[in-house]
Image (tube, rainbow, N blue to C red):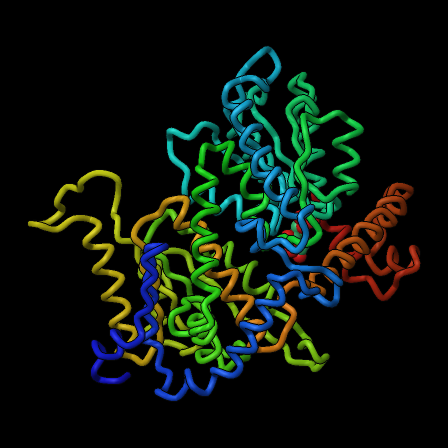
Length: 505
Ligand SMILES: O=P(O)(O)OC[C@H]1O[C@H](O)[C@H](O)[C@@H](O)[C@@H]1O
């Protein structure tokens, strides 16, 4: 670590007053020439980003444009139709939310909807969950609940938390409209509504691609309405589309402010001067810290409870985007950037011991929020508040880590509000895009996810065969015999697992 940290801090502090954000990279130990060395690659990354924003096929494998930046600046969209679709959808979200809040669109028995059940997974849940938790308050217009898994007990728990379903609006979110976990959550919800003597379709809304299975179902069953999910918006970058905006608007969050924060951050991060652009600086730091091949993990440490879910959201945004076997030229590269973390100071009492003294395989991104709370604080010690301690723990940990040669960046924001959350989302989206260019990969497809889905389908098919076979047998044959009998001797291990599960029911 250079001894003159103040000079280095001043030299490398990037301040963006338009979004109330500072990025300090001084405690990343890159050498004086690093930024110059990377400049040609960075300029190429800016070129690729410009082409993407102009509507190039930036996701070549899937032959798709990548349009999440248009969602915040519709005038950038490559066609007037797309611009119009984006603008009219935001208008529709606002008018629909107003009608729900005023009771114009109401629940059975003229009840006003006060609860919101969001059913989705991956990019169709993580963004809405993050925004809901970061910006939610006890005064919200509607209380959000989420089904984001096919875990039966998990769903029962959510249904019991919701209690009376009659004033609960349901939003089923799936870009493809065919994701099994989401389908199962919807079927379980429909069954719960039926048990309660309620008509699910009168309380349900879909956000999905035009003509998807979910879209067709919503039309056939006469759901309240549908909102679009476009082919050119990826799931993990969909939080500023209807996917994130509809739940947020219904909850009572100011979505125009969220979009404004994202848009302003987009403007700033379009700068081709890397040192003025926090997204390019972060991408460069990811490259420096990991050798451009994921050698180190990124630990996210926001010192703010409201940002607890940010690392979960970023796990998908970053790891599904960067974690790729092949680069754009088809070379096997095995790229990735592992992300984990929860919040400080809580994590200091969990794994920070290892960060300081154990295996040195990470760098940290701290997030500091200047505003402690709405209103004033009591003193927990003479002249000192709880927020002062939160600040002290952040800077203390940062110092303790850098004394041991552990690198960190610090993002400081003025406060947590809708515009700041929009800006943070946009900042990391842009960083991912620029970094993907630096390491020459397609950030916008996810070929690896399909393998797990296909394998799960095979297991379900096998279970059906095992069930059919054992029904005809009073005494349960051995797994080997069952596997043999149904013609899959090589699958005996999974047959054993299926039998064990069936016996436990
Ligand atoms: O929105 P859906 O089509 O239901 O997809 C939900 C999720 O499914 C898969 O896991 C993809 O890898 C994710 O990127 C996506 O967000």
